[in-house]
Image (tube, rainbow, N blue to C red; front, side):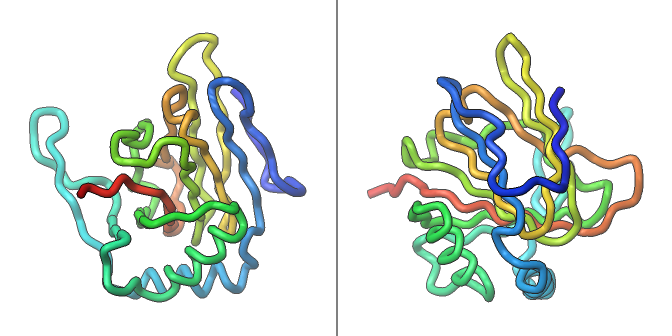
Length: 194
């Protein structure tokens, strides 16, 4: 297991080989902007509670979600601004934003990879973190097993290339200790159905 510090300088390349590329960078947006965006999204009224069949019964998904795509007329503040910043920073064009709101230590997302059938091949996924720092686990699917524990700080960006989704799962586990709210803003390029 590799655990990374909150005090990195510049981009941290977690992975860069035939199985993909994953890069983490702190302070992509400054603290004041990260806090403003967090509060705007928190109070925007965009959030919904999804239900899913798990363990042979229907349960609430343990987080709130929202999604905006290329077909939406307008995105709530500050998503257009965030899209421009992330696109400029990464040199990539995105057309979809998925949001997860982790209200407290009880909210989580299980280990998973992004559904590649929904995404344009070769295009990366960028995760912008707002609010409280939360730990993300990244694990290889095959041996030799590699595991990265990464504290996602507010204002940070995690960039995962398309190939990495074939070889690695990622998730946000529940916490044993109380923790404040966090919003994850995920930028993707989705396949368009004709």
